[in-house]
Amino acid sequence: MTYLFISDLHLSPEHPRLVRGFLDLLDSYKDRNTQLYILGDWFNAWIGDDYTAPWLDEIVHALQKFNRAGNHVYFQAGNRDFVLGNKFLKQFNGTLLTEPAILKISQTTYRLEHGDLLCTDDVSYQKFRKIIRNPLLLGFLKRLPLSFRQKLANGFRKKSAETKQVKSYDIMDVNQFAVKVALEHVDVLIHGHTHRAAIHELRDKKRIVLGDWRAHEARILEINPEQDNQKLELKIWSY
Image (tube, rainbow, N blue to C red; front, side, top):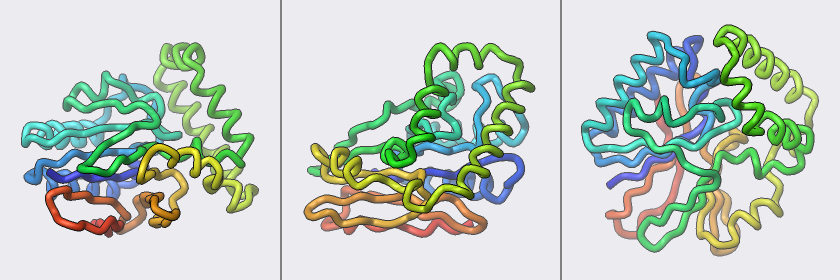
């Protein structure tokens, strides 16, 4: 069995190369009994499970083929696609993960999360996150017309890009105390969000940051428990 971890793909019709890279990944791993974990920001924006489009249909069909081959997809919400739910995932028997999620592989315990909750120094973002994910507000937004939700998502993306230009680099990174708390009862923390792919050694524990998907490649994590003394390292996926 292969455990594969990815995040921050930001798939959209405006970036067909990224979509093709994801489809190629599914095809490459479909015969390897793969447990695929997508830790947030799978899509650049998600306006609701009632959204349909040809480019998305192609992804769903590939995921259905991936599932029929004996593999499974797990999804954990990110800051761009937190309204993605079970209605979409049911099309290919995908599983929606809580945040954080705990995974045990052999004798190692992993904590999985998108990573934005670790950025506690970004106070304004944390306040916005709490408001926008209020169940009552989400329920209201899901009842709005798709066209309005699309405009709203575009506005959020534009505002986010403008805000990032004035925030310091450190504020948007993880807080070390938050990381320490997250690692308290596990061996390894795996997350994305910050786009700063790396493996950090923290005494006898590790923090693995998955990479965002860029023009030609991404940093992903593959774990094969059958391999003796496997060293955890980020793998370059080129497309």
